[in-house]
Image (cartoon, rainbow, N blue to C red; front, side, top):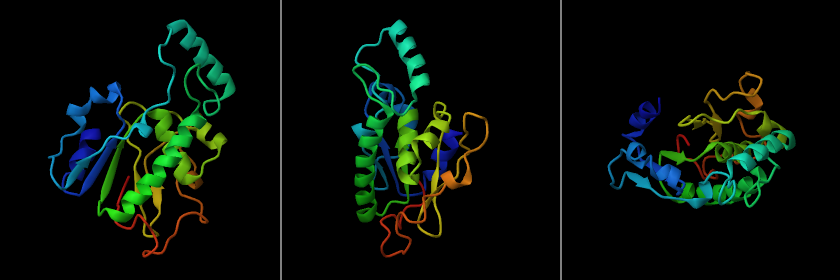
Length: 198
């Protein structure tokens, strides 16, 4: 499934932005299959790393921490010597600001963001203005699961992938589109007018 998406992008100007931790480096030979030329760009960004769970993890302590997180909530619970989901959201909000600046100056058709579950949910939470409750409804994406944000005729991005909630139902339609009051829709004002998908 992932390879099919990569092959689709081979004939477009594409920018790939992975995070830079060791867990992703092991997969680079499978991910970065495009030629290294002016059309295909790869840039690491540490802000896209997964939630920090602490420097060294004791299995028993981690098991208790995950149980506590389930009771407290995945967005606000902070791991010892690590981060909460809210901390991840803070750095992702900063990353989006950089992303919009890149989109305004680079003629790139597609962006491929390589990251992990909580971070992937925070990326969408920021753009679609999800509440903490809505964020907590979602099932974390599986390994290599692709969430595609596709640009519509109004120059806003729409979540078109079959994302699921914990109750087994698909994500409600209102969570797939940004609120009407956010992001410009006029072509000359929109910083994302050249990008087809994220």
